[in-house]
Every structure is written in C-alpha cells, then in structure tokens.
Image (tube, rainbow, N blue to C red):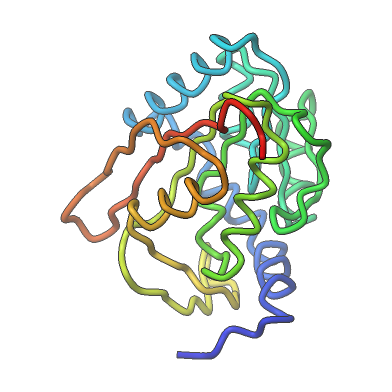
Length: 220
C-alpha cells in the first residue's frame, strides 16, 4: 500500500474530489430519503441545535450539499464547507439559496465559539490519524460551549488506497476505517463529551458509525 505523502495528501484529496464532483453529485442526489437511520440522526442533530437556541451550523466536508440542504429543511441555519472547489461549485449550482465556501477542516477558518452545531459526515475518512486531533481541536474551538457535534464515518481497522471512483474517474485518496471507541477517545482529548453512538450495518460489508457528542461546557 502506498505511503501517505505528508505534504501532498491534502492536495491529492482536493484534486480527486474536483475530478469526481459532478458524477458524485449525480450518484447521491435524492438518496437520503432511502436511508431511514441517517434521516433520524439528522433530525436528532437538528433538534439538539434548536434546543440550545439555534444559530449557525457548519456542515464540514459538505460535498454537493445534499445534507446541508436537508438540515436547512429541518429548520437549521446550515452552511457548507468543503476542501474541493469543484464540489462547492456543484453545491452552489444545486442549492443556490444556501451558503457554501471552500475550506479545510485541518485549518478551519471560523471564529471561535461561532457555531451552534457542527456536522462532519464521511469527511474524516481521508484524514490521517496524526491529523485527527488537530481537526477535532478546530471543531471544539469553533463550537459554542455545550453545542452538538455529529460524525459519520466508516468502521473498521484498515485503510484502503482508492485509485478510482464515482463513475470510474481517477482518485488518489486513502479511505480510513476506524473504531468508534478510537474516535471517541480523540474527541474526549479535544474537550468533547460523548452522548451516544449508533452502528449502521454492523457485521455487513460496509459498516458505518454515527457518533453524537457535544463541546464541553467551558472551553479550555
């Protein structure tokens, strides 16, 4: 398996998703209604945001904006951030009334304590282990105390080197699979409290986990 290029993995991820942006958006468009547990998780997240007074919510790694738009339909003031300019172009095209911007979770350009909630679905899967604590530190800094965080990620113990996808287009990314307990440990170390986690398709070919957390009542 190729060695991760410590300087180039982020650029490879950006280029890969620029390449597949249109085909990826086509494949996921309209798919959310078919996934009951994902919709339920988003409804719980939206309810948690409203329960603490609402406010801006960042969908980090938003891709073509399908989840951002669904949160908006649930009454959440959601905006999307993605590393890929190509993905952001598609999101703006498909959801012209919503806010989308290019950015990286490894250097999240948001003011401290500016968010009422943060969601990162399937966007941590390309982040190397050594970068995850930095990412979670940015998440904690951007969230107001006691506000919800929700993560969706692949479950497992291995990483896969992905060279093509979404219509057969070339890609150069690792897909990292992790155990919920490891992710929860990283979150606690960053100052989060864990509320719950839910396994999807446990024992299946592509298990996933949804992790529910919130920023600590007072920031360090």
